[in-house]
Length: 511
Image (cartoon, rainbow, N blue to C red; front, top):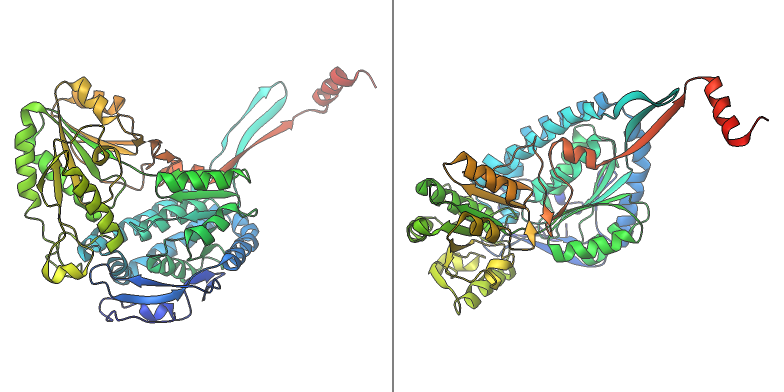
């Protein structure tokens, strides 16, 4: 750590943990070797939290080598041994929950009540889930499928996994990448976003403290163009897992293809929020505001396109606007804060650009500007509702990643479902109706990896998360993600010497 910044101990109690650097390789913190530094900035104030040395390609090579050395021993550990280590890990993280919650709030600008009640408990639950899953790495039952031969399928770890995580949920994304990989017996090198490395580094340190061997979990904190691309293209990395934008996902796929890696991509989203005319209007309004503003809208599953059947449209717009105006912006560490800042001023200006351009073709009902006064120092943007945009407009089709909800009317059920599917993305969606058949049709016909009914945004460790179409492929969380980090081997036994001789005779004749 080159510069400790100005964060006070109550906001950043773990600051001293980063004195040795922001790379975590083979169980210890080191400084990056790129020759460049980067500042972690509190987006609520613009103050620097710390400045650290970025990873270079040499650091990536060292981390991959450490993971490669650790792989044989970790892969050979019994499922019970890996499970026990992960259970200890869960306990360590639970003991440090407040430290993690504060670090996550500081680097991301999330309200502390959100990190305390959602991010950290969700991560602890994820560890507990994969601690159990580690004991259930199953192949397929044996059987005689070919004469006197017995076949069965083994599931085996792949090797060194190289993962890249985004800045919007750094702690949870670290968990989603690391846990299924190591539970299945792989080792991993994770590159967090350079804006938000703190909780990923704390996560790896906690794993070491829980007894997970050195080299099993490694963190390299560098830029995407240097550390990220080198990690994806590294010949000793057997699998790449990436979460981020669709545009960068295409670049990751291009690099990974050169070395024929296993690839896992969770990319952008533009989630539709479809309200039929028999829905509970008040529930839908509250669901839309919560679903659109979660994490200041910086969530790839956030409600971004609300399609409201015509009889409810004007009432929905009016009540949603009124509810948005009650949302309290403020210091993420203040108990009364509902909404924190965006991750940076750059991201705030990007969001503002979408809304400003939309003024020429749509109606900005509420919001649409940054606050003044004390909050102007941070990357804040008011909750924004945009109505009456065209389906093919930029604000409807493009991922904004901010506290902006666009509302459009529809007439028939057919039209509502068609509009919901009319973007390149397919990560998540929700349908709101009291009619089980109507809702059931929506779950079947909306093309998305998750469709909620009469709710929007909750996730659970036991169920998969991942998209269709330009939102990528592969699953996070659940047993499905566990299987993503394994490779399948067919094993076949000849049960009798006679059978083998008969098979040889068929091929080579009697010799």
